Image (cartoon, helix red, strand yellow):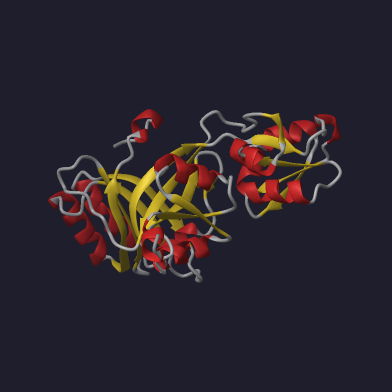
Length: 288
């Protein structure tokens, strides 16, 4: 297989084999090779530089909220969102063979996983230890076991790294779900009549009174369903950036007019992607 054809059948993710992002890749694209990357920047770069055709990027979790850094990395990655995926996350307590629950003192995992299992950890009096990712914590534990140390990771990580599962499904919420976006080098807008779709964009309003109110007014008057509006600072405390998901297609006259009004009151606007709404939104009670 040539290098080009290999890259065309590759999807990049952040983390080590067995991470939840890896499981999302396998679930959505079982026909593609999953490429582990040390950081989110590396995963974006793998797609941008042609080492992978797609990237699987977690953006928010129903328990822990948004994934740190993604909102600031997406606008500068030079990529386009082409799809979304909702992954039900199951966390398991992993330990080297022979260890018992009573032996555990510290629990190692990604900070998001630790937060999603907070009550379970506190109920046992264990000390949480932050690691770069869930599968990485399992890998480290298998290679360099510490007395009293366990890890929180997936069942796939337990299988890959030869660890026992001491407790299953230890996440605090039974709705624990992570939303991923799939990114590519080129946009892949669906046809306007192909069904419900999401338009994601980032903008910054002018630094004048009531600018946000005026910028968003067009979405109300044109009947546009805004699914997400999240602010974040991008290196300054003067003007906030806003990450936004809306239901609709930019070629629809109503959304086109709403965006036109938004851009009039903003001094920066970037369309990050137009893509089909996931069928999982129906099951999750999310508008489509």
